[in-house]
Image (cartoon, rainbow, N blue to C red; front, side, top):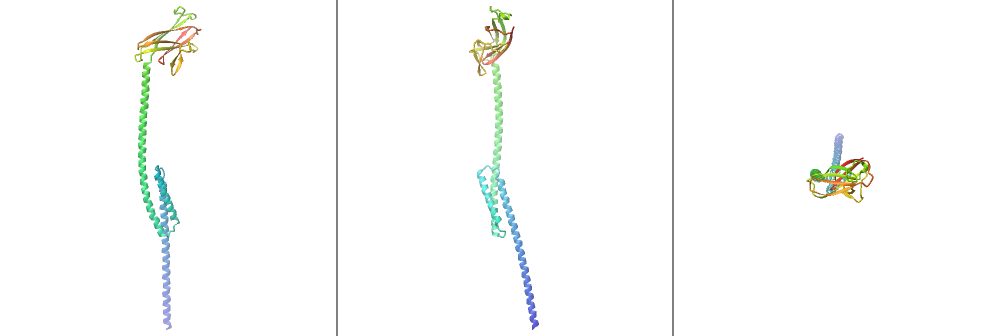
Length: 292
């Protein structure tokens, strides 16, 4: 009887031992499964954080060089929303599966919003590029037109100058004769009482006909202008210039000869004199002669 009890007791001990071992093994397996699950959930959380950070960086990149203020403001708001959810994810435990799942779902929504913004930005960029191209073409056309206008202006100016020069009258055949008191030519310097100036206003059919005046400036060898009155002036290059002698004449386009006289009332200098002629505000002749 005692042996039978011993066997029964031994069997119970063995069964309990096996049960304990099985419980230990099962518990160990459960702990290992939990650790593996926690590691997986931590990894998944880290991956989710990385995806949120990438999305935030995308908003930073697209926020540059956008001229649409409304779109810039919307991007800024979405970027802040991503940052807020990222901070919320960082403080969420990896084991909070429900929260992690919600944030993962939210990331999907945020990506869809980002795709919509990318489409808008690309559209704006294409429009801006088209506008820049059109502006470039307009500037080029303006530059071409401006260059053509400048060329036409220069050509017009050149033609006007050519016409003006063609219409300018010219004094030719200049001759100075010193006269004595009997109005006869003399070669004696001390006998000179008058200077006679003979010249011809050349033929020019392009000059407008009508009453005209020829002015003469007579300069001594020292460069001083010889004048009879300070009130004798004529218009030249925007100012009033003094003249020595003048002569009115009726011009019809044909050559016309004129004579001017300078009564010597001053002490003459020996040397080279200059006689310059002006008609219609233009210098039309310059000559030199010598008295000695």
